[in-house]
Image (cartoon, rainbow, N blue to C red; front, top):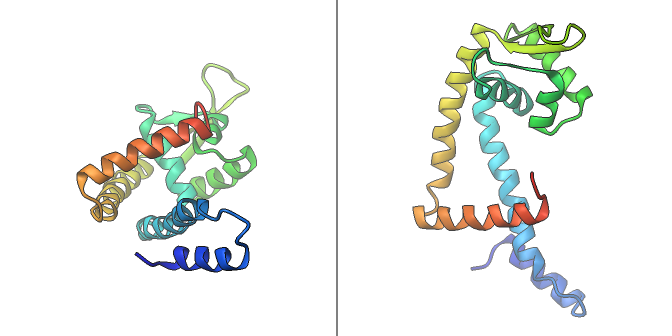
Length: 164
């Protein structure tokens, strides 16, 4: 099957026959697929008035279970962004009435970010649509292919980023 990546590989093989360009077959396709999938996922987030990062924060709070709250540092760690980036996301979500900030009951110096009722309702709607969208995107593969790909990606990620 010829695609954009295979054309690039052929061109590099012609120009640099001294290099093995076979890694591009996997990395190039993963990169292109990641960009395509991200755009398809962001369509759903935008439909709910959210950026990808804001969706991540709301989803992380919702997954926490009642009372749907976490410390800002925990949110940053769970969503893999800097604390400065997290502060900006929380500020936007707070202005939109989707989260609140308060002092921690356990540690009066610490802060806690919590979902508001509006935030919980929004993330529940958005996440439901998100799961339908992911199922649609994955439907290009058979269930067996999806399971194989999940196993391969899980193994690769475990080796590339142990514990992450």
